[in-house]
Amino acid sequence: MVLLMLLTLLTSGCTIPGTDIEIPFLPGFGPNVQVYKHDVVVIDSVGAIPSTTVRSGQTVTLRTVIKNLQKPESKPEKNIQIKLFNTCELFDVIPAQSFCSMCKTGQNQQQGPTQLGGSWVYNIEEMYPKSTVVIDWALKARDVKIQTPCKAGILVQYDYFTPTSYKVIFISKSELDRLISQGNQPSSVGLEGVVGEGPVKAYLEVPNQPIPVGVDNGAGFGSGVMSFWLQNNGFGQINTPINGNNVVFQTGSCENYDLVGENDKNICISINTDPAVGQATGGIGSDCTEMLCAEGATATTLSTCLQGKIGSKLNFIGDSTPKYSCEIRPGNRGSVKLEKTYQIKADVKYSYVFTKDISLTVEPQIRLG
Image 1: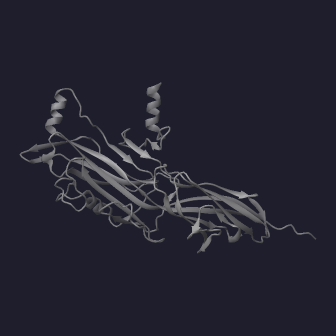
Image 2: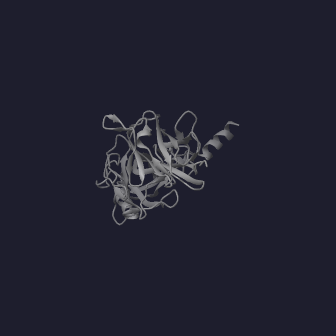
Image 3: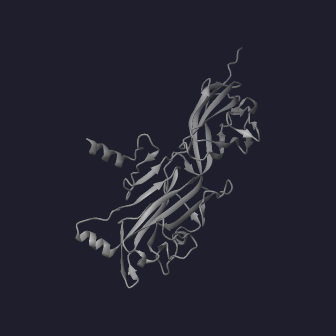
């Protein structure tokens, strides 16, 4: 029974009880990859007070509840935008009667939304993990001659940074032969990693680990294949222009990178490698002597390899980008005496949109006489 429960957990993509850790159901992944919560800022509910049916001239309040689902130790999410983006030309917003529990302009609580284009907008400067925001949109129904339905739309938009870290392990061929001859296996087998919070995540796939490396007088052979892709696991959408997102590769972390304007969104990607703790380190822009390198005509960094594969634009096909693959090897094969572990850190920053709608009906006024 215990074995059956464990197998069910490992193949279902469930969350481990009592944690924010999910076991993903993805090819090439095993129980050594921890995947944290996907959705972060969500629209928990949208309701109409007193009713979803209103007569012309009457007022209805749309109550929207926004929740931050981040784990408690996370940094507060900043600059969240909430839009009432569709009223079907059937309602007028009454800013003086609208309200947001956590929206501020400067030091003052923002009582009413701001009109921006065809939308009515609230801005939350800072929202802490596990907190809740309540927004009331006061709407006055316009005059209609016949019962008219409307799906009013609410949108939450925010920028988010998701870090990931994976281990890639190489083993000398002589050490692997020794273990096999003694009926043993390497201490580490398969991909290990931690995928952080956020709906869009960077995934890596490096099969057949540990990767054997043969050495002969300092020159050697032995390489593996690393596949990289982004995947949207949330219930919203990545904010993508029609012609695709511009891709920016950062030499450091993407955490503090500012995404650009409304109609030309960037995706920031940072991928760099370090040897295991205690060994020499390197970063993007360094040579590959003490790094995990991408194989090619000349050894290069993983970042340079992926830039060449992805180009300047990145499109999602459904919930995922295509997979981009690079052949990888130790920068100095001769340094793999027994086993050597490299850390691949893949960060991504993006703009995300979460929407919800509510069905309303406007009926004509009751006219007497």
